[in-house]
Image 1 (cartoon, rainbow, N blue to C red):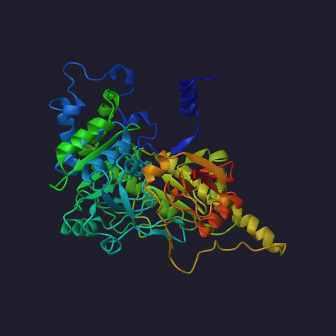
Image 2 (cartoon, helix red, strand yellow):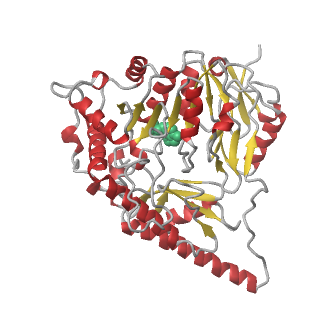
Image 3 (cartoon, rainbow, N blue to C red):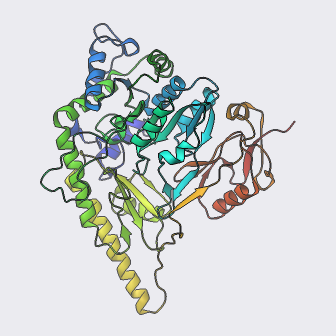
Length: 489
Ligand SMILES: Cc1ncc(COP(=O)(O)O)c(C=O)c1O
């Protein structure tokens, strides 16, 4: 059997193009660190200590801090995951209450479990056209804030590239004397110098403002998702005085490894230096690629690439299937199998590509050519069917309302009590009224339909059964028919 390295080498030598993270795109030209093993050490003499940085690592973290402009910035070598855990643990007391969106990443739920937090969930809003999570306004949040609430936790940008107005949410939080935590794992490129050069008329002429500039107290960035830095590398930024820095550092030491990889940290430092010295070029390339894709696919009849109004993050290229002739998964498979283009993910009616300033022109042109060629193929097929009078392609259905709000199940027990209870697997159809012992998620977008401690309602059971019947990707249903419940005494 081939080992992992052999498999990775095979992929690297193949013609498969990476339209997915990390931001360096396996492009060796993006780094001078071609022989990583030469640098693979952990804390030895002269190399400082991540958990109490005073020398070379403090300098590197300060360099990162300078380009983002928070009060303090910390390197994370366990990804944004440990940033989310540390931020929530420091900002909310054990057993305390936090307002959050249902679409939060798994690390948020793990923090809730570990710190026994009480969550006041914002109504789960979904854009009905594309079927992706919507953003939040200060109005949505205002009514959820009361004396017990110790922090607000928002994901912006979302995985798909939508952005909440962080400034107005931060203002609201600060009026109430509580910190705003922004999971901006997908937004490390935001706020870097945006070159609105000659062609300001182009659709994507800048990147959205960073959550730090907009006043969030704690911001988490995965460098590896959209910038040229190795997988697992991320940053946690803090500003203002609403979060106890000593506590934050304590939790970082708890959740981060005691053997931080210097290869990863050097990769972060190089990424930051590149953004410091040539960030403009990086952003310019990204915006140019994005505009090129936008312009060169605008003639497609069967596909739509939503623009800056719908998806402001230039790094996220959604290819929406306008007609019901093809699912997102089918398009994803065609791009992968026939065009050797590996995309980030497939939704029900779309596929998502991540682009960066380190994509190659050739890669971008291959994506454009593939979309146009598939569009032409569909047109030929549609004309043939039409001539034979057989059928007409129908528009993908889109509900009348633009945003759908999904009810959140009733909480019957604390999440950690339920998760730690004795559990039993029971038939989904017999679960009415029972308390869930696990998560059930519908992918994409991966939002939990039910959490441990929440009660199964009749409506939810019907929905899950329907999703299963339609062959959708549901996680947390054993053998596609049983669910985990807290054992009844
Ligand atoms: C919104 C969000 N937050 C946090 C994370 C965790 O990031 P990391 O993989 O850097 O730990 C992810 C990962 O996909 C994410 O999508």
